[in-house]
Length: 484
Image 1 (cartoon, rainbow, N blue to C red):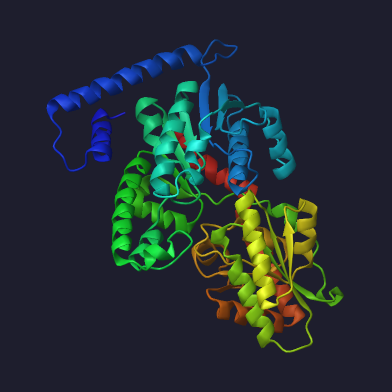
Image 2 (spheres, helix red, strand yellow; image 1 turned 45 degrees about the horizontal axis):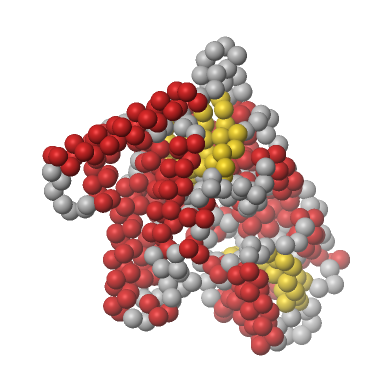
């Protein structure tokens, strides 16, 4: 640890632009050293010993929502499994910091097995945190980014005082915890970034006064409020870059995320792309259904019912396409997704009303079993995805592996990593507006059955690079320096 770096970081966070007196610097040094000494003593008395009397290496993952069952959780369990397989002859205690206090550790591991078919070869220790509510967006209707980031520092402090690790890996994107564990905990630091807390795209949305789900219309339509928000975003981006750059190893899930992290964190020598592990084999095992056996074509969307997924665009684009197409083809749109809370349920009700207003026949499949999901994907002709700047897109990969022809937004991960030519062959299609989506649907359905089959085969071959095995190899290569 470099104490000068820590002092500069603290000064930048709390008193930017001011000249700090020697006395103030001395007080900061004494305060930090006091906390560091206390934590060191705490660690010395709490680290378990192996049968040979040597202290265990403690490797901790910060994942407050480890029981959520989403793509981020699949990354967590695959990462721990990879480490346990690689360092099976080393005395290592694996710890997961979680806020899921309504379940036991055994139930969390059972969920990982039933949801992802992942069974860890060795036990893990769960440290249950009490202050997870401090990182929930609902607490901060205004200045949400700042509120959640400050909340994560308090949550991180709770985690650090309950268990001091040797290696700390943030696997959920709470960058403000990184300097806490590095400078006060004396840990080696790694992080896996699914999505930057703030991005240059977010800055451009505010700068251009564009209305988005994260930029309310009353702000985008007001030059003064837009200017103030832009200043707030720039200040936050500066601090975010400072805390993020304290990580020793930085893994990102896509080219899009890498571009933003490199710009904001200025840490190219420590940053690498590690594509998330997608359960491609489960979907590759689905037999390709001959189109001649289909009585109608279905267009399937898979994704949680969250605002950024932009389901209204899917419904409007499908409505536009139905108005343009001639008779002779039976079509249906199926929206498959999960609802996390009352807000998501209200969002589904609003989507149903939009379908009624546009007189579009749409089927909603909410929180359906995995086997039913596979059945719908096996029978679908087109997979639909409309999120702007999706950082990666695990659902897109799964649809391609299942044999659907993907039509996704022309941005983010789909544009840069997934729906790209494979060995010179088309793997899917992209669009960026109601009209271009409708046009792409028409183009896909105008292809012959043989042409569509070839695209499906190309897509299936291309997704092998997103398998569990590829993730394990790249993840272990990236974190190796933390274990030397």
